[in-house]
Image (tube, rainbow, N blue to C red; front, top):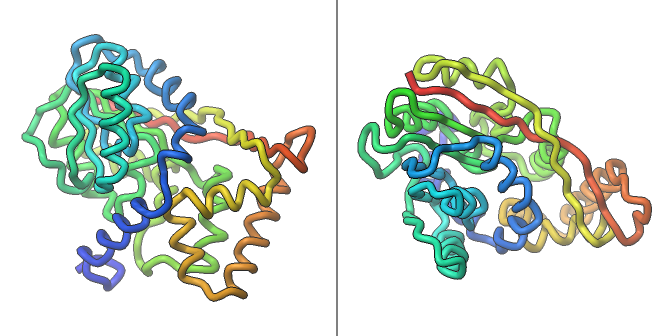
Length: 274
């Protein structure tokens, strides 16, 4: 059982189905530049063995491989892994992509010099297991680097609207707590030292109106697509209106009828394995 009262297998199956809905690869392309900058800032040494957890379509695994690291990516969504393999092959990069769970990583103890995750492992339902699994697979002195949405992020406001219309299972910790400094220290301090959090600017830049931006996420972003599917017609219209209002209120593009530009931030977390 889980803290929500639902069997954890049922929760995991629902999460996998959500991430496999739509096509996250389309969304990933809009944030690929930020992922490359995230990896560049880490400056992980050439030849390091790096595990990219909840790797999706390879937004962070591929630039890691380009930089000369020996990279393994792991994710629960097999369709995203297929895209990641195609991307790596197209660039002639050698990356291992495995199906697996951030809460039960299929690797031995102290197997990696560094572990990364960007907008991925934060969504696993049991954060205490995520923290302990990162620690388990890292060598002493190994680097953990996470890119997480925080409570103040625009995405957090999107999630809030979705959860008001389609409540998540009760009792699960909100994913955005992985962007809260106090919570991050509590979760990581048993295993890690030199825990640091830093806000990093990021943009959503879409060549469409705010209504078009909502349609984009409704079509391609699995969790949003699934949330809409669980509502009747009136509920879908209400959630669409609330999301459109959010996107419109945050849009700083000079031509808001045809362009949506949201400037917000995520939280970079780094820590060193004890």
